[in-house]
Length: 188
Image 1 (cartoon, rainbow, N blue to C red):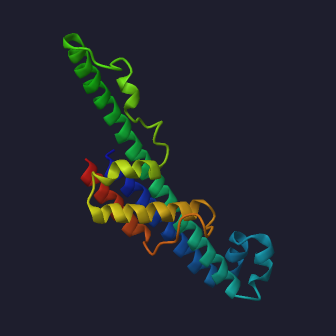
Image 2: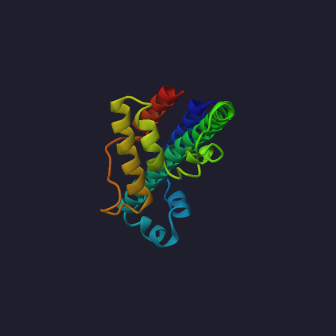
């Protein structure tokens, strides 16, 4: 499966989850017994008396579903980027090793045996924030700015929406998917 197909699969899982959410919400409005079955017990006891409990419950559920899938699509993208970094590391390592072997036969080359340790590999870059500097010169300025916003949003979500870690974004999951797919196109 290609990188873009992998991102699309995550997005389609979100679309399916959203459809299940819509169907369940609609059914709870028509069928209070169903509402009592799916809404946590303490809230469900009140459902028969207050219909806004259903709306509040489903509003929170929608937020949770959306945020979880935003995190999932971003972490899927991270894995794709790390795999590309690892593949690139292997290619660069073999080129440099080969080149240094050729040169060291002709002349004295300082640190020729340890030159590979100067190349960053995926262990050196353990987060998308770390990979951001590598991607900066590989993608357009606009995409890079979008990526920075996505990283900040991911940080904000994954750290409990704390004020001093990352920041909220107005990007929706569809826009995030498109930006990440465009980045994949540009990095090859």
